[in-house]
Structure formats: structure tokens, C-alpha cells
Image 1 (cartoon, helix red, strand yellow):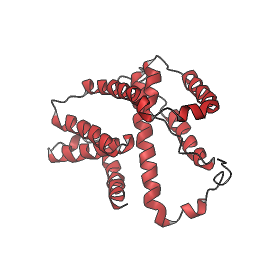
Image 2 (cartoon, rainbow, N blue to C red; image 1 turned 45 degrees about the horizontal axis):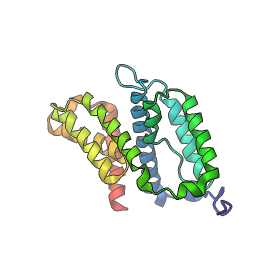
Image 3 (spheres, rainbow, N blue to C red; image 1 turned 45 degrees about the vertical axis):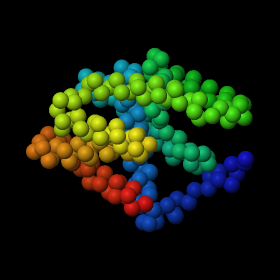
Length: 212
């Protein structure tokens, strides 16, 4: 199939129509939280997080991901973004950009074997994804599950991710549930001001998902 019918076919002015605002926000929120979750998860697996669990220079992977997400559709391909499957490389010891470049070269070479790759059923890759998921669950050991105001939002995050089949939606739901459960428990003072501000667009995000 040729990419000519879709290559560069982007209507920027049309996308600015206010009627498309809910859809644009859904795409943005999903992309943002997926990238944040993937970056922190892979960074944690690679041992790149600091003592407080923050990712140094996190703006760099966000910059790369935002450029890829913008350029991908212009080339007529699905949205290019960071995927949690990247944790497999971190688990194998990859910590630098050389790991990403090696994976990119392998993907490029696979274009020559696309017909063969299409013959492989999706079920054949399931075991690898299951192992990646089990490896991610190891991070739950760091959660204070005895404190229900901290433990319940994490469990809710996992449940929403499984139900919605979206890493970003799961994180967004967990953060919103964290605000709700802390408020109900009378611990609203423990909620950072930034999370209070973030809760407003998150409510809009889920309202948009339900509406559409």
C-alpha cells in the first residue's frame, strides 16, 4: 500500500475548531500520562531515578516523545510514542541511547521481513508481554499498602489500566482517585497543590471519555 494518500495530509486549521477540543485533550492527556508512566517505569527499572523517585532531565524523553508524536501522523503512520515494552531493554541492562538506536536498527531491518512478521500471530508475543507485566508488578513492593489512602489509588490505577487497556488512562484515574480518597479521609493537606490543579483537567478528561 502507498502512503501517498495520507502523507502530509494534516489540516492544522481544521483541528483548531472548538468542536475538536475534547478529542485533542483526550489525545494529549493519554499521550502525556503514557509517556510519564513509561519514562518513570523504565527509568526505575534501569536504576536512573533519584532518591525521591524523580527522573533527572525528564524533559529530554518528553521532548523526543512530543516530536515523534507530532511527526508520526504527518508521515501517515500511527502515533509514535514511548511504550512500556521498553522496560524489557532496561531489564536486560540497557541504560543509554545506544539501546534505543540498536532497537531502531532492528526495526528498520524487520521491514525487509514484514511478510514473515505478519505471519506470526499476536498470541505468540503474549508470553513476553506477560513477563514484562510481572516485572512491572515488582514495583508494588515499594507501595505502603497498609496505608489505604496510598495503597487504594495504586490498586485503582492497576485496575483502570487493565480495564481501559491504556497505561495513560490508568495513571490519570489513579491520580484523580488519590485526590478523592485523601479528601474523604480528611488528609487533603497531604495533596500537593500541583495535583489539585491537575485534578480539574482530569475530571474533564474522564467526562470527555464517557461522553464520546
